[in-house]
Image 1 (cartoon, rainbow over the protein chains, first blue to last red):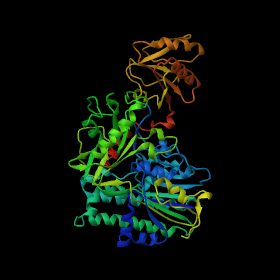
Image 2 (cartoon, chains in turn blue, orange):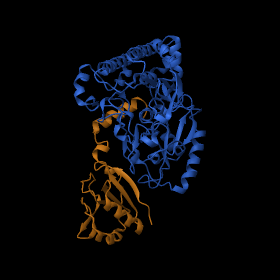
Image 3 (cartoon, rainbow over the protein chains, first blue to last red):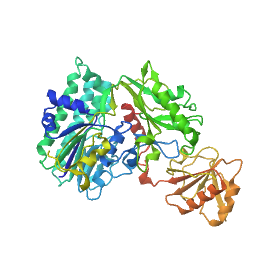
Image 4 (cartoon, helix red, strand yellow):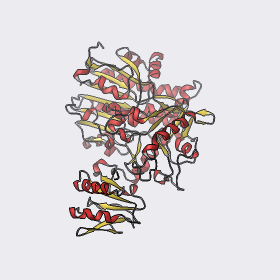
Length: 428
Length: 136
């Protein structure tokens, strides 16, 4: 095997180090001594679909074409969900000469595409039958109760039931990993823990509150993740490049703000009356709209059927919106830490599909792009949110590329699978 | 002179592209999932006319001169629909550009490139998952 790429969805670099030091994750403590752990920047915006797409392709969204979990079909108001078919850049396992790979639970790989090796899709996989390549592996996975996703509705029945479900799903995924590990001479294995992200979303308040009855529940889940990391480490040969990455960091969420609501209240967005509002209900007077989470699109002539923003007014409108978001507050709290121009951050053949602006959420604030304008401040059980800064990048190995000072998700492959010219001499 | 606006869709999702005042010039020969009353352009020999029932056109050079006649008070825009890499669509849109006729060129994606693997139930399920994580 050449490489094992371990994903731990949503694990902040600082938290991993803290849990390793404190004994919550003892195997990680040993692991982190053997290589380099650095903070990494996520995709823009910090959404898992785009970030994992960047990790496995080595491109930013302008190159792989995944900007979020949703997108409008070109020239229309039809909302589409991004999937493995949205990729316009090959993941590393599909590259020429990659050799056979075992790919388990990587988000944004549904439906499973033919590839050299075995793949079981991750979030947002719906149906295990369409999540498995080759299909003959399906029966065994069904026999062990492999689930493409945890039942998140269980959080309504209580946090303990929800966390029990996360444990159950993780156990089956790990069973699948170890069952298939030695069945082929894999060149690459990639395996992603995604329960960590779900846990962080719903129990972050319990992590922060050490008196919460679920504080220990939170730590116990990470302890189990670490146990599974230990099982993986036991099986890895010393000459295998090992990388462990997360797609974004995490922090407390105290308020979720609907950006479309804010745009509508301030005259930038106008919708027709509708029982189930959608983007097709946008009236021509609309100047801008939002998509998940924090992507702002000008309603441009030529880009959208009813678009009315002419090219020569786009710049002044972007300046107006930038000032608007920078100064916007809800319930007395500023909502944006920064407003970034899409053209400044995306590169590649699909950069023209990028949002015009990206609103980066302020501390404690999450941003959403729902088209339902009923609530500016959304009611939600979610209390943890993604962060752009402080995802985790750990690597050890002999044949590595240089870790950039400003490490980003799209740089992962350059470090762990460097081309000959990118190799640096390094002692593990 | 106008600029051709390019977009892509699927035969099933084409209503997301069409607006009131559009006339469809379907070069793809695929049946389109349009609503009743959608205005189509049909060919009789080389002559192009409007029709309110689905129609497809096999493009011939002699039709170019009829494009100018399509400008009318009932049509705001012509939507040229073609398969990928359709040389006839390139000819038509060039003509429309030259004559300054408002238009849109929509390339039909093959099913394997689209989200056709998702039926309505799937769409609801994805929506729910994304809602649970606060994305939509």
